Every structure is written in structure tokens, then in C-alpha cells.
Image (cartoon, rainbow, N blue to C red; front, side, top):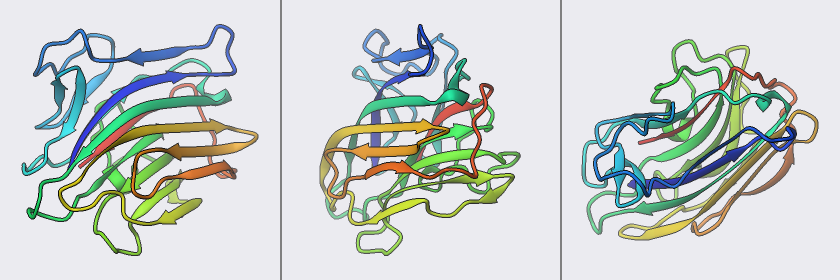
Length: 220
């Protein structure tokens, strides 16, 4: 699976809002340091053709991530949106494995656990994860979901839709939109996938935000 992204993040409760925006268009191919405080980590992770490539299909990419530093006011809520493209080779291997958008106390540069959010990551005790699991077609765990960690414990699936994300040899592209508010909960919407997320006002009462938390996209 090959994952590419374009990213916009803002804190809707702040006036003016703290924001991060990046379209990767001004960087040459192979760039791994954007010079804006973010971190790109992974053997296949770099800017390619005006997009951020985190993993490469038919390669042994392992885990990769894109980390955005803490933004003031995130504990009051945030909204993030980005474009994605997923590619899979024909008759090579079932699409694998997935990716997640994470907000929590993971350190900058943490590779994360991809479609498992930040589960099992050392020292990560607080995390809210919006997950897309592409492995394996027909598997009951495959699909889109919201999960997380609170006080070091897995909060389980707060919302889940089972289904195929992309088929063997398929390319899909679309959008990811995530929101979190300490009062109204989490929302997660996707477009362009075989199975899309459509979750609104999901209770995340066990999770508490903090202005020191980072934002990390993790993939494998």
C-alpha cells in the first residue's frame, strides 16, 4: 500500500485559530525535512511530486509517520482534513496494512502503530486515533474506526464500520476529515474509499486533551 497526503489542521475554538497547513508543492522530490517543525520518519517517507509519500507499495517500508508539533488550544478541540491516495499492486499481496491520524502524548517522530493507532507504543498513555485498516480483505477487523488510550489503557473501539478499503490492484483517492471537541466528542468522515467512515459526536469521555499533545499520521 502506498499512502500520500495533503494536510490542513486548525483549532476552531481559537480566534485567531492556531493552524498548520501544508501542500508539499514547494519541495523537491526526496525531501524529508520540511523546515517547519514537523518530522517525516520512515525508510520510504519523503515528498514525491508535490505529495507526502509515507509508504511505498511492493517495498519493505515498515512503519512511517508524519508528526506535527503541539498547537496552542488543541485541548479545546481541533479539526483536521487531508487528501489521501492509496495504491495497491495487482496480484502481489492483499492491500496492507493501514494508517491512522493520532492526537496524544506520543513524542515527535514516533512511528506509531499505523492502523492500530498508538497501541503498544512506549510511553504513549494518552491518545485519540482515527484508524483505517486495509488488511485483510474480508477480515472482520478490517475497516474504519475511532479508538484510543486513556491512562495507558486501550479504550476499545468507540466507533467501527467493517468493510473493504480497496481491492487488489486498485487505486483510491479521497479525503479524511476528523474533529474532536471535549464536550461533543469525535467525528470521523472519509470519501473515496470502498468503505467510508461516517461517525459524528462519538463519546470520548475517557480521553482528555492537552495543549502539549502532538498530531501524528502513522502508516505501514
